Length: 212
Image (cartoon, rainbow, N blue to C red; front, side):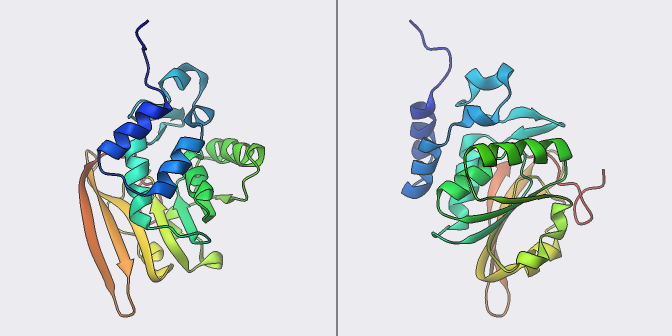
């Protein structure tokens, strides 16, 4: 019988074939059930390498994009990571499974509430709040890493300034049609930036993002 939809093993093989090497990340993506973060009509497509709708005009990022951004953070066990855009909660769960201490912000109340329920069900100590992620979360700063799961027109200053020394900000920046993922590392005196080209995200809405 022909298999209509790819499974988790196919997803893992694909991201590895595209250059993902972090074994802790690969193990976390092998463990976490992506279908738990997707509504019923799309569950059979959970392991396709594509973004899928999660409500509120938002999406769960494609697995390869999750892998690229997460690997770019260079996470270590116990790292304090801020996620901007909780969405379904999948990205935050991957980070937690890798041993990070995760803080996450979501501007859509319904998505925030659903993700909190999933974190509780999975018994994950993820700290989440409803609000404008472009402002960061000053009371818990500095962060070893900040990951932004929506496309920004510019890099928010608030997020850069909430990085710890040697911390990394991974953020898609560009126009509404496409963005490049910027990897910004804070050094003792300044910031250095590298980029990975050719991605597409939903817009980052907020005081230091796009207007509504």
